[in-house]
Length: 451
Image 1 (tube, rainbow, N blue to C red):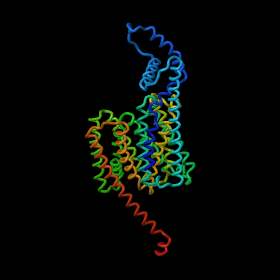
Image 2: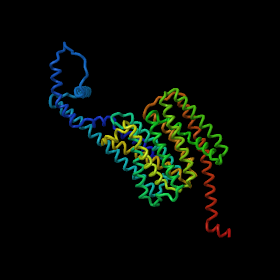
Image 3: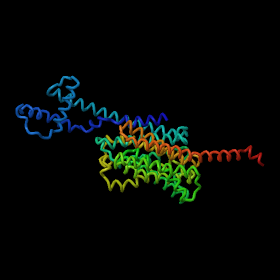
Image 4: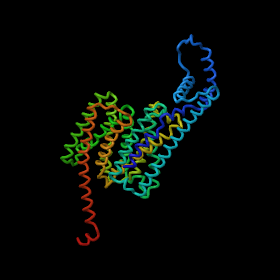
């Protein structure tokens, strides 16, 4: 919990606010400032006070010098003249460049530390990366990656598009997933045994990658809370799938599924009416992601842990990279950072990719716990907890002014999510009792007594 909360804070605090502005000033800009300084001062000297001159656009270099001069006067500093003024301005710009480099190096360092800790947890089977703890870690890192992605999309100085984030997510899953598979002590099976197992593994990887893409798409067009609100419908959709495939449905599920559906529909309608059309577009992306998550949860449950979760993460990244190509070719304007290969965008994309890896790995590992019986409850826990955390993050980080009825509808949906999780967790408790009885029956001493 402390580690996940630290991730949420560091993913936002390490983003340089004005440091990226310094990256725009290269050597050519400095030469322009030195060359145009004399010309600008001569123009001001030639213009008399009685002749204000026609209004026109202010050159960028003149505006920069005026802004820095105003800031110096505001801080009661003595403004030098001539060469001293240029030296002070150049020193100020170089200080900003060094601050930006320090921030980027800090983000790369944090990314490396997170990967190391995650790999250590996988190798040593740490308790914080098992069962419900892995699901809670997935929810925290999901919200942290959403906050970082929204900040990058809202900051024009980065020049990062939504397809850049998708590419970073898929590349991290494919590369680091393959690294984890290689270094894992269990030596998981990479190639499926048969055709049926291969289809299931590719299907889980496809839906996992597609859900992440849809989440980022909804995040691009609207608030993240709207996307996660509708993604919470995956519990009701899973009940619908079980009814379609003639699976056993308990009485509590018949009650929890329509209650959650009504709560989410009310919240979506009220949010679209009070917050605008962006909420409805985000809800559409969230609905598609909810269908994918429900399908993925049922497949992982029926999969019965036949494929290791790190291998599934690798499959998800590779399938995502395959799907990324046609989308990037159709919308190249949303993949600006990947096409231009600007180095100052490397650190934020790496940090986002690592957070996405932690979220995906934690969810898939929690769903594989107890031979897949925790699949539905793990997805429900991640959806409900991430919805509450994202709502708080939008209020605190982005200062979103939610309408009164929007807040009430989100609270109602969160309450229904708690009830849905209690219903799904009841099945986990029943499975634990069955496993305990089976273990006690086949213990050597009990087996000999039975004979």
